[in-house]
Amino acid sequence: MSIATEKIVEPPEVRMVLENISWSTFVDLAEQRRGSVPRMTYDEGTLEMMSPKRKHENIGRLIGRMIETYSEIRGLEIISVASVTVKRDDLEKAYEADESYYVTHAEELLDKEELDFATDPAPDLVVEVELTSSAIAKLKLFAKMEVPEVWRHRGKTLEMFRLIQGDYVSIDSSVELPGLHVSVVNDFLSRRNAIGETKLMLSFREYIQSTG
Image 1 (cartoon, rainbow, N blue to C red):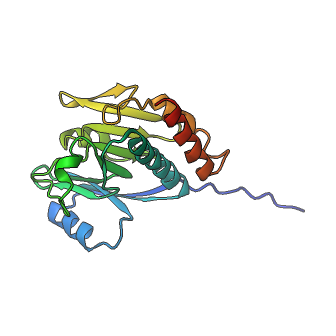
Image 2 (cartoon, rainbow, N blue to C red; image 1 turned 90 degrees about the vertical axis):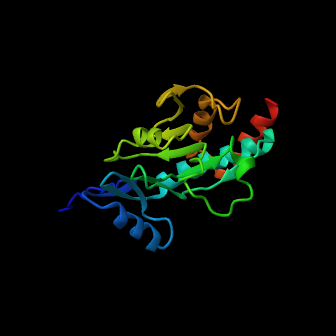
């Protein structure tokens, strides 16, 4: 007699949510932690810790590589700050994105080794991969922290949003990276399981160069 076994499908992210956590406790945890995992999001007493797995990291990193490749080809200066902890004491809010960049503010921040978000602006472009539901409404949090542009991937396709008068509006083409359309990014992301990453990025580079 054979016994059928079901394959256990693990979630692409592991999330832990803690309530009634003080701001000072969050700051201590963030500063004492080694590395950038788990990634933390804090919103007025709610602390969410997310540990990404392969699919999450692969999608986020590919989007980041496309941003970096596009900016290089188009000659756009950027500063990559990856998953830096962006925290605002006055708002009691903080986040650690999958990828984040300064574009509009890149030139003025070139000589800064460390950032103080009490006075320095939030990154101009944030990439957020959310393959499982977050307990925190990320777009509302990003809006409060005045992130100009958010790219969000929720498992199927990428969406781009621009902050306009305090709310995010869906856009078809990036403002921070003029000429880069969301449909193009999604087209290349859809190929990620069919060809190798090097071939994918070479193809993306050739496409951008051809549309010069």
